[in-house]
Image 1 (cartoon, rainbow, N blue to C red):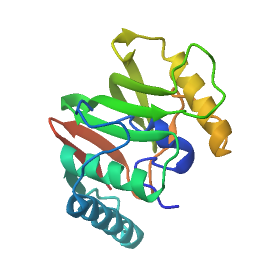
Image 2: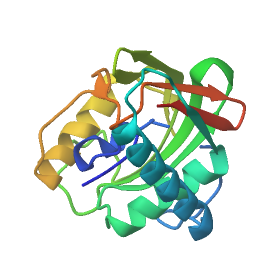
Image 3: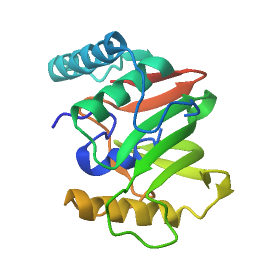
Image 4: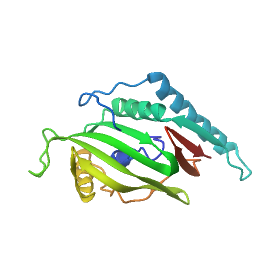
Length: 193
């Protein structure tokens, strides 16, 4: 699976973990044209990175709307069972806010978790070497502030359901092939390759 910006099946929930839109649970409108544009950007980065022989960096930008369309497209195409929506809001200096809709209906979950949950988060992307992570500053379940460890519990439950390796929201993830750095601006992400 060639999932960009650590959007692999195992790491999909943490994405950035990347907000703040009011869509019905499990239904997210998005632009297929914007999603296709991001897919073309991914292909371009891979092609050009494979041909590069010098150490120079190029950059390419995608808008917040394009990123959200791409995420929604991947959720639909991958038929994601747990995460039904992920929306990101991008700010200067790698600040990110987001909204995640989780559906654990029909699963055996601890009694303090609801089967359907809306999580809101705020944090900052940190890039070091060829890896990236999200440093959470705020995490809310609906309107209640919660400990980020609760998100790790949800990730562990999802890993068990989806049958993949458990990981933590605090983990570092490899950047996708060719990407050397990621920087956000208001409503835009810039990828250096």
